[in-house]
Length: 315
Ligand SMILES: Cc1cc2nc3c(=O)[nH]c(=O)nc-3n(C[C@H](O)[C@H](O)[C@H](O)COP(=O)(O)O)c2cc1C
Image (cartoon, rainbow, N blue to C red; front, side):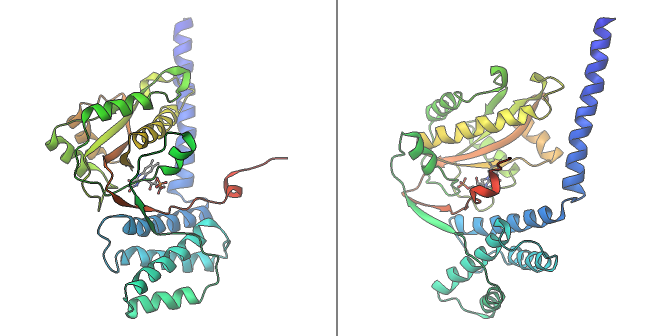
């Protein structure tokens, strides 16, 4: 009887917590309940897509016109709503347009399209924040923490040198220093050295368009069944912590890398599970594209928000 009551409690509370989680997702993501935040998200996604266009190896002239159009339309609607003009999203949006214009003018591309962007920008007064890309010379990565975290950036174009399996294993060993809830270590890293499988993993990823010479993918999963009903979402938290530990480990071994999102696509999920033999109790969280760094490589500015946007002091 006691056991049955315990089970019923687990089912009841598990359901309540899951519904609570779902409602939050549904209200704020699907119904766009916080309109200003939704606008900011739309701006930041367009900014990131355009910035990524600078970060890939072969940046085309006048790339991403579709995203530029989305950005301009969103800026105009955002302004009409009277939302704040000193926020990170709005300033990033105008700054990336400014960078886009400068990139083209520096290359003597000054046609009616670029001119229309110049007019758009001239109509607005704003404080620029750094956007676009930087070129980095590949040097040995520092082995002190401050140097290491500052040296880490997402890289999307790699050299054609092969990443050896023992290097991958050393990185995973180092990443295992990550903390985990009750030391349960529910995260796994799947990889293969089979070229055909590596290519098929690459085809399943959504965010690797324009990447060059990805040598391998590390697929990160977290075991959902290792948590209790009051730990909704903890499998993801633990995976996130592990992933950051892993990218720092990769950086320590001077392996270029870029985390790739794993989007909700049931068909792709099924295929990836089949390619890597991932059981259903494990959720696929993300993957990491890896490869050796080139002698010179591009990184994005990917400016960070002002500390006051994320640090909240309550008195
Ligand atoms: C969970 C997660 C998913 C990401 N997905 C992608 C992706 O699909 N494609 C991509 O090019 N970058 C992806 N990134 C990398 C981010 O764009 C990058 O971390 C961000 O712009 C900051 O730049 P930085 O890593 O160089 O500091 C992802 C990062 C995280 C943490």
